[in-house]
Image (cartoon, rainbow, N blue to C red; front, side, top):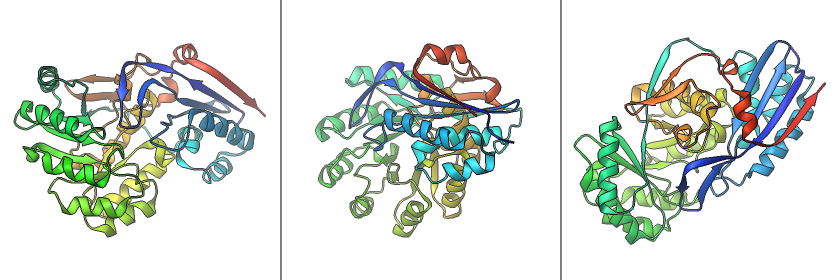
Length: 355
């Protein structure tokens, strides 16, 4: 089966609320969608680069998607996968996902599935934090998340309000997105109270600061999770050999495809690492596929972070919803579910390539 046509969409979707991270505030999801057609079959993929999280930008990923598409249009699916496989994660994920879907490598059970979701705490003041924690708990969320990585004193004050408000049985993740120096990270972990309610601290230091992350993990009982530091099999082995990291996070787009993500999940689990799946900046397409991947880690019972679809009013797929703190979806071929009229509404640039 050869590829007949490829469509590439650059989209910009306003968030319901700005998404604050240590390195920037995101107001729009800027996703690249790729549609691949071969005969009467269709596959779709998505990639949402986040400058600061990755060196890729929307422009570079969109440009690379076009370059790759010119190389693979007219080729067989196997040859196309071989060509795409040489590219990095964010640049290859959208076309690779489309081809994996098209070739039947992503399979569907037809069953309705539920995935527990993390709840993002956005409030800053004590009373607003208390109200948001209560709302999350009443909604059924048992794991909350708070972005840190700025001023340590401010982060600790906010953390103390969250920890004080947490009901029994509810935990919180703190995510610095590489925002701390080693000194500030130490101040944060040492300043926490009720640390038994903290599930983990995510990526406190820069990607390359493995030595500092090891030292930090030895200074606290709170698990350190690596996210931006984990891109490849070699990174996972490095985390295992360090002997002090309990958790890693994997995301579909940074891994560069569905089968590659499955492979990394298996490698991590074989080496006794806890794996958290999910991307907070993705539309329903990416979140749907990451919800499927969560099945591979379901025995760990760790809340997924594939909640980007809740941050936007863009029902490019209507078949993933949320109820009682759960992502709910029917495991069916999403190539049949894409609403192209919704996609067109948010498309700012489009390329079409034919044989």
